[in-house]
View 1 (cartoon, rainbow, N blue to C red):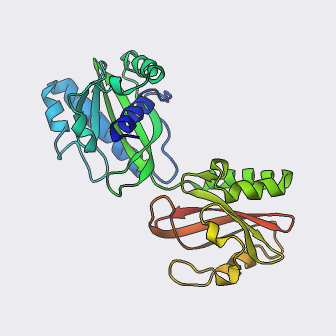
View 2 (view 1 turned 45 degrees about the vertical axis):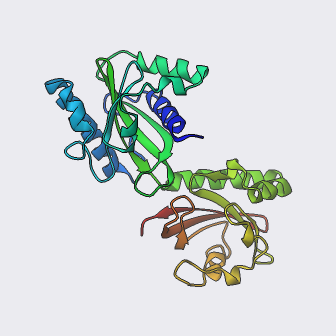
Length: 287
């Protein structure tokens, strides 16, 4: 899909998001600082616009007081025209993005742009290319309408939370208990139900100590855990098995490459036993 269509859809998803109240939604766990920064930047831009008017739009489109290393403000008019952006979307300034949308999306976009001005901050998550690393990542955006303009600022969420990893682990374990063969097949063909952002499921056959399924690297299917190494070269197969020795649930950590960002990070793997299978899902942290 052309980049400009991706951006238009991103704007649509941003502006049609749920309303979480005047303070915006609760930040994603582990991203409280980024959420504070985005909301502060948005409030600063809205305040400046209310005090100075349209001249502020030019300031928003320059690197400076309304941008940080990872956050910027952009502004869309209620007519669907990009008016300002301190980020890569500045190439759309002056363009009406509505013609880029199909009829169904255009209706939703129009409804969002005609929402009442009531000083309420809205919040929404969508997927967008992170200009810092070139990766498609989840982004949490706060936005507010001021007159005939909508101001927005957000932060990227390259890593899933422990709670999200636990939910996927529970879902996978339940699925495996219901239909083992079908579940293993779905994991191995990278079914989206078992792949959520940087989270994926892998399954170990404890009787053979081999991978019965892997939701990220099919080359590991049937491979013995005795050969598995972390990103720093450490053998980690025995550690994974030992964490489940005599237990129904376990957890371990090791260096692994984040499939979404491509970075070498610390992976925290959660595990549950289902008969002779060990079902596992891991989430990442920077260190």
